[in-house]
Length: 309
Image (tube, rainbow, N blue to C red; front, side):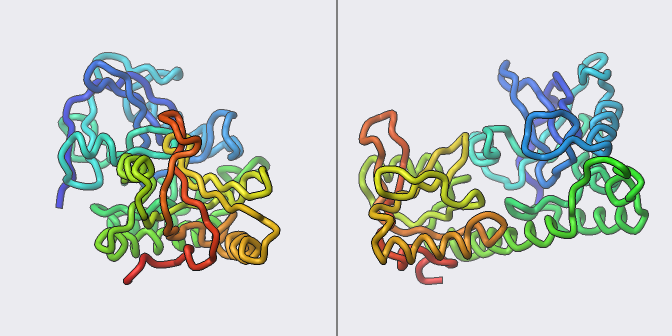
């Protein structure tokens, strides 16, 4: 299966090893290479800048014919392939990351070379499945990562980051694959069971919250409990781009304490993270500027699998 493809889009800037900017409908859009996570080349995130990140950024700029500032020399065009074959407008809504950037596979226009696979094969990124594996190229990514590891290139060569910051892939990769297994279950069973995902069904969640409907939502709780306020616990179960909250009232009650222990021990930080939450959706505050939420009063509202799976 091939994904939906947008062809001949003007490349305006190469940001780093896994992010570029393009013109789409006369608007500049940021594109994150799906299934990639090159190391950092600039300060500003919670991940350290590494030598491998700086080298990956230089490699990407050279690959796309851009200068040190990331500006292409001449008219450089790229094609974007999305990870599903949905209609274009659905893809433009569905394939976005936590910051609103489009997610896709990138090809230099007129070529058949999948740049995402190329970057993994060159060793500048592991196969990044933290938010789910590639639907189209899973086996190819596994093979590309294996080839890079066997060759001991870039991030797989200890000399690349020797004496500086580095990432511990021996811890990160098993955690990513644990999360990927949950996403796979959702794709196989959760969608059929009627569960919604914050990442792909946000508009439907907002509409359901405005109507006060019963919902089951797949949430990502990787940051755990975010705030203690008003006698309860607030959890940000969405993202900067798609805000969705869980509210646990009466935090000192036995029911709330049971819920909080389960979240901290099973779903928060570098645990399982993903869980299904069932309940009445609402907007808080109850106005057009509010955010969708579900109030949790009983541990039975939290599940590893969708109802009926």
